[in-house]
Length: 243
Image 1: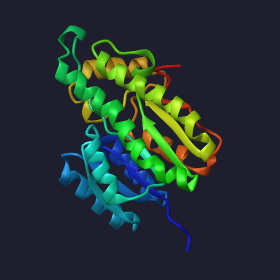
Image 2: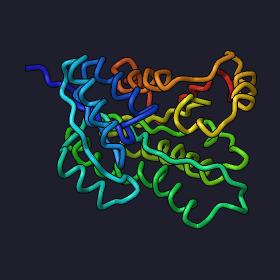
Image 3: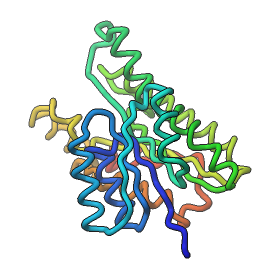
């Protein structure tokens, strides 16, 4: 019997995470959907995956910013072949207005979550000498964003973690890569008015904003054998916004 590869996607109940879950299901993977609070959305996505793609899909509730919660999740779901660290949060604040709570929540979710989930997934990958970790960063982690210092710092940390971890686990035939999305139309963009969105579109050389499916396609590629010689890289999926 041919083994079906298994993927865990964190923060998969909506946006980029949901699109990524669907893309991996379409590619024939068994899917584990992690969510924190959006249980109904996660259930609806699971039902869609099972009915449309006829592949296994299970739910895994966990707060990725909490190491104990992550450990409990992995004790329940077991081994995965691919880990997509997508869960994140973001707020816009002047640097001097960022509260301790906002700073700690952003760093612990956007960067800490990558660390906790990767740490939990790696022992089985190392034992099997096989595995792929894909971290979702941001173009702001590369160049910084005004009024998003906490978010930019966390996402820059994800890039550094990706590069260092890729070197460390490469001898075990484990690949670690990073996707740095540009402006992607997700729930995070709901606070932007039409004028701001129009300006961002004009700043994007390809003349449009990104979709969650753009990121999902990149993730499936990086998990595939077609990317078997790619590790420690940051793939910018940003329409040319950052070159």
